[in-house]
Length: 232
Image 1 (spheres, rainbow, N blue to C red):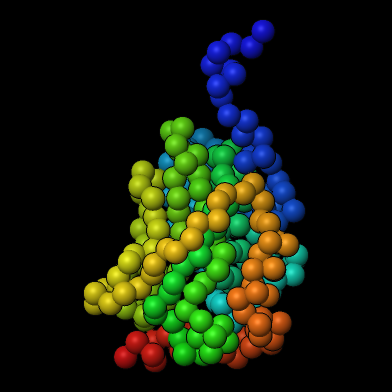
Image 2 (image 1 turned 60 degrees about the vertical axis):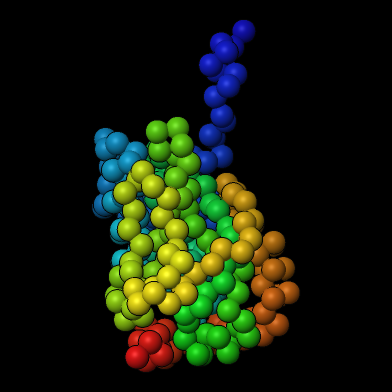
């Protein structure tokens, strides 16, 4: 008969295994994870090192939106060098699993008061549905991290970059560096072992009627440049 401790222990299998989008078995994801941390490190050290690598090595780019199965996978971020909040969180989770740290995806709807005029026009709203973040199990506690906005983007936008110490949740600041309203969490959508793409697509179709054309913005559009211009 299992011990009482075993009966109470959560089943973490799904939070350690490769999945369709959290493809932690992809060679490029494995190489990325092991380039920045190793299984010999404590989970907190792994989490912090991966957070800053995902945050700053890959540009936040909501203009080049790819909602295809391939475009939403962790490996796609490594291959393209860019991504928006959803695939960047997927990469953070996948890299953690490579190194044996249980990790899962979290989603929330957030109201973003600071964005580029072009992105606001594309969306027709300042409500970002299905904002993605990562949750890692550290010292038997799920800790949130949001590796979306790279430091160079934050500097240009006048936003304090989100830091992460592995102890405290890292979520968007309510105000920017000048005290202006920045982010407001309006609805939590829960956590998942893998990206719920069908639910995501349905939410985007509902809130953003023009979403089908977003992917045609192309690499000629520079989100960082537009944000810098609008923050002056």
